[in-house]
Image (cartoon, rainbow, N blue to C red):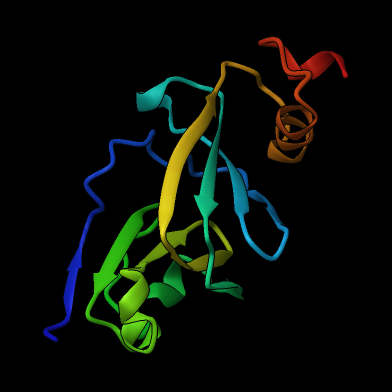
Length: 144
């Protein structure tokens, strides 16, 4: 299979340049909460990756992206098709995404992805993620 690197077709809010994400991986699903960029409206976003096959958090600075094994832009979503990471799981039709932040890179091999929250709260992503997972986010994660 030919290696193809692109921006995923999903129109999720752009990644902000300040905060690193909050992440929960339960062995099946991964939840990633990140700060959205000003262009997408200030606030936090929570994505749910379903049927996760592989999930990695790697230290990677914006400056270090030039040496990364795939071409990746800063504060960006990148989809890699035809990679080694998905080769042995082809029967599941998995996807492989890279998400770059200030000082880390998330690598996710998964089957589904969905936006479960895009709020206007101005608080750490960890607080928003906890509220969303508890089901008690009513538009204001700052209070709890």
